[in-house]
Image (cartoon, rainbow over all chains, first blue to last red; front, side, top):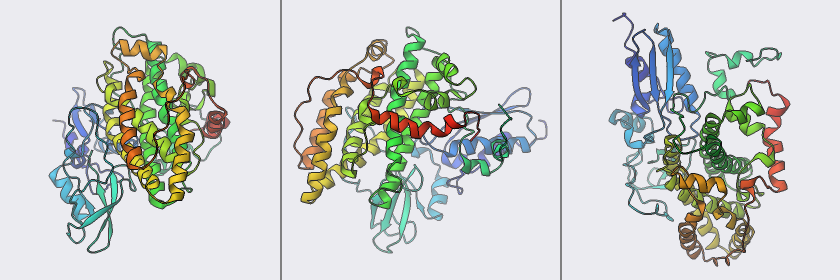
Length: 167
Length: 302
């Protein structure tokens, strides 16, 4: 080896700019890290949502971190397939989300055959309050401060909280 | 990249320019960087580009309309929701514009050779060069009308994207697979509002009924297929919108029944309009606002 810190170790430690408690590895968006024969690094990431504005910041942070560690060339590639799912958030990532006060996602909905069913009532998921632990919570909005979260409220402690919604 | 503009923003656009650039906006990387954009066999590059522009323009113009609700929505939660839906659609539009530019670079190069393809296509085409359906360009109206329009649009687009996931073009298939997850949430959101308003007070019921009546004349056009769409559907790359009607009607029936709204009568025969570049004045005004900055400062890096 060339004495540099392992490229994967560096890439995995880069954090999400909007969910800074999560590394790209926790979030499940880091698909591969390869060191080429001439010492360059090719990192492949996948977007969470089509319009996620954090993607550009992630690319910059990956490049900055790897250049700072001494790698001479860094290429960040995008892969669109397969589409990211919240199921790819690691167990460690889910723990960090909950500790930060954000309810982690449940399992993504299984897709049955036929047209995608319409859901006229907010899903009656049992999302526990990340602040007091009560299971008695309600969805206020399917959308929140970032594309990946819904807004909920705890009926026990009355605090609002965010929930990484399942996709 | 030009450096002749005398601008304090230069440092922000630097490759390693630090956090300021993040808040500042683009300097965006190509959203398809590293994605294989080879054109599948049996398809003309110009057809594929034209098709990507149709799907991109639907999303881009709808996104622009949704963002008009920022600072105007009835509740903060709705403003956040509509902005998020607009952001998802903007992301889909960026990928599709980039895909169009990769398929046929001559179009963005003719428009603005120095810009990324997606920017050239979004900011330097005239209304007559846009290929979106009329439904997305008409004015928002009130919140109820916007909810009905979003319901019709997302119901149609979800049915379309769901079929597009099996496209022979791997980029379109991937964009669709991601879009399906997003638009499922959009459709549920719009449907719940239509039900809440329709099954609400007399006033909210009347407003959403009026919104439905105002929106319905634009629904028929969603299912008229252009030559490009027919050719790409036959090649297994695109989707013929004529085949989406049954699913659309079924979803609308469910929502309208729950909302105590009468299903509108079948619309009269419609021609292709937006898909051939025939647009209303509403799109001209929308583009004037959306494109002004880029056209006033074509060399700017922002």
